Image 1 (cartoon, helix red, strand yellow):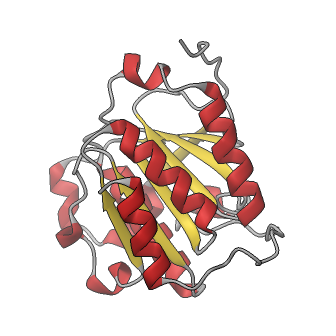
Image 2: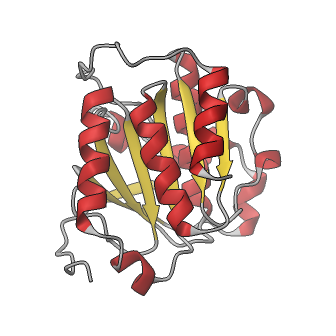
Image 3: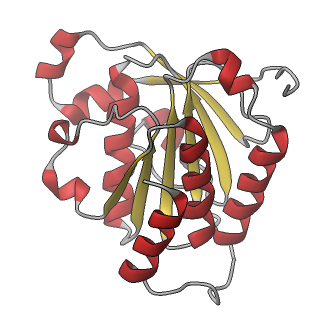
Length: 211
């Protein structure tokens, strides 16, 4: 889906929020992870970077927790899928009723779609999945682009979660590594039990300059 097509879809589906005040809710978005929620969850009006392997089941579990939290709060969520990797059949249908799933065949389109969705201000949560983007391509995303996303999130009070395979987002307020990667056998266990067992690690890292 091109950014223009996405813009037209949003304009027809949701009322305009251009005059909505940009106050940021001081409470974070709950995740279902006790170690994160004890500190307020994911910050609203900010970028959180989650570094995790592309095949790790932990990111999927975290997404399920975030969708449940945003739905419980009456908010909409959007997922920008840069690699057509999202599997809706692995989630309860009730969690997907308020989700806009944007499938982008090219990373540049995914970045443009995320920018549009965050600025739209109709979404409590926007997730940008770049886990399968090769590191050189991820490093080439201009720092100015990430800062524009940060400002847009601040204005709309949106929680923006960027999933990457390596740390690469210079304007993230919160940076996390989600470990461990879950084995296939774990998928037979209850989702809530697995989610509580995941351990997020807050990290500090030095980012290479964009080229």
